[in-house]
Length: 435
Ligand code: SAH
Ligand code: SF4
Ligand code: F3S
Image 1 (cartoon, rainbow, N blue to C red):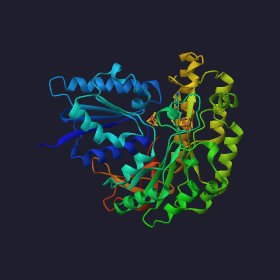
Image 2: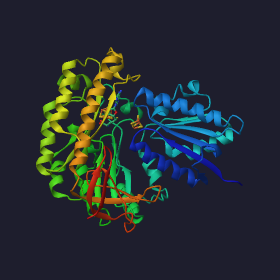
Image 3: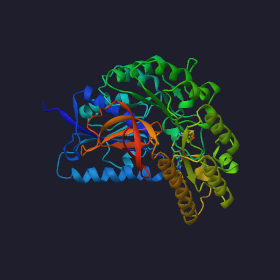
Image 4: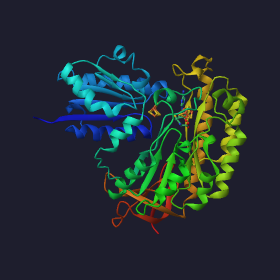
């Protein structure tokens, strides 16, 4: 029998990227072949994101594009996975009859069964069960052939924080920490395949806890693995850092001096309205604690602009906080009303105002990013090299602060850490030569 071909498209965050790799492994385990050409698939998987309205709209408009491609061909099986699948499970088929299978972020390990059922019964399938245990048990037995220098490993799922604007607690379910032994086994297998850097993933990794193994303890265990040279984690909530984790920055050289620590707003009033449960001063104090333990640590953040109730003075508080901290990288978004979240009942502020505020905020954040990259010029960075660029002209790696570094050199090998003398910088990249 001709083997079936699948095409997978990933939207949204790094957790979805991790999940898409696992979904691919699952489909390969039932003899599906992964392809990169959109017009030759027997099965499509869209692993989706629901975080802002635009993200969700994009999913449905892309389904429309697939439908067009296959107008005169046999219809592929269409799987809608991820956060839109979870949040809109009851209305997906109304919004797009093209979808055959709806599967949530905690149920995708059932995909082989769901596909089998769909083929056998020609009946649409839905699984949006939010219980996670089952999932990691099944995934544990999968034969994964990842061979990346830097690999993601999900250690924690879901969120109990319920920030008033956010869909994640509804799409990913309650907080759940994976079995630490299970995580170490997965990392050992990745290390055997050439992984040198581990990026631990979760919606709130800093609240990781598996029978008293905290994130700090887990990082120490990972650092004991000889082949693993670098450890990072993302995303963290400012409220979940204990002293053990903070002081690890002065003790553990494998823990990289770059931390994504979203603050969303610099205004106490807005932080309260968002239910973030910390103040601006709490955030600044935390930043100072990290800097005490690792003076060169760099921070990145997320910002929401134009949250309901945000006045010019609140916006100014955010600008001031940005100036006070100095971020090496940031993501900023205009507030997007999400169905089912508490903030969706609040009055929105005019688009013109939010656009203006976003522009102002982004211009400062971009300036900081550029300044930070320029500061590296004429300095030596430790770069972990990942791969050659597509034109084979340069080697791509990342420095300790996660900034992409490009070097023209034929002697470098993937997986090596080299000292690089930085000669030039752009907004997003650094360029240098072997030191
Ligand atoms: N768990 C992470 C981030 C999750 S979502 C955390 O707590 O930091 C990633 C980012 O999307 C958030 O940090 C926030 O800045 C943004 N975001 C979430 N919901 C949003 C909404 N309704 N409108 C605009 N941006 C949103
Ligand atoms: Fe969303 Fe807040 Fe949870 Fe982050 S901490 S995922 S922003 S609810
Ligand atoms: Fe999006 Fe879901 Fe990640 S909503 S940001 S894909 S957790």
